[in-house]
Length: 328
Image (cartoon, rainbow, N blue to C red; front, top):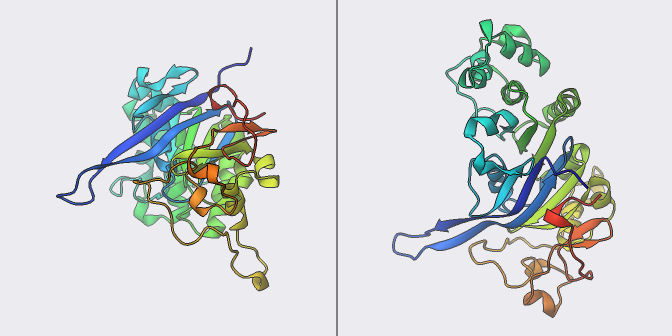
């Protein structure tokens, strides 16, 4: 019998009530719509998609910061709503996009990293454990009493990583952790995250719009579009043989280092569908070059296609694996 995934999203949805004007009726935004994910211990699940596809809302649900409207997030098979906030925080920690806005500008970096230990009543004499963790992420002890404003962007993100790891969690949710950094610094932070994963036996959920970064770090990838997963596969499978037309367009959008080739044409146009009024049938059909009449009326299920799960009428449907588990 297969063991349970360490972290699992079971048909999770999240809706928000939106009013575009004072005298206009409210509309319902389906930010995340029936997403199934399963993350095995020690794996790195990359979640990719355009801005507005629901990646960050899903991250907040995995962290327990935003409750799902429907479905459940489970940790070792247990609904995280049954766990206390502190118990969940000891096992699941975040690293956010902007290292400056996520750090208290008035506190020293040693006190920032020490705060989780204080909240959980863990002994930390002389902030020793915090300083040791700062050294683990590549920051010298002499910076321990500096404030975030005295550090570079890359150094601040190292502080955020140290704060996330000082409790020795099992899972780290990384929401665009390198997008606010210079390219050279991005590489340093990515290599640091990979080293720390091996050192602490971490499991990552890595959310990004940067496909090169995801290919570098992830073991599995889920592609989201308008709040739904449209393709899920191992990283090697997805980058070698993408099945969904949206995945193919995303991979075609990666800039080449050859200047003569110019900017790639993804074939998606310049507009993005209104998430308040999503298209009927397959949500991708207005932008799809392979759309058929069926695509306009019937939404394709996320079904297995060889070693991938794909939501597309171009392929024959078959039952997906239980609870949306990643293809093996």
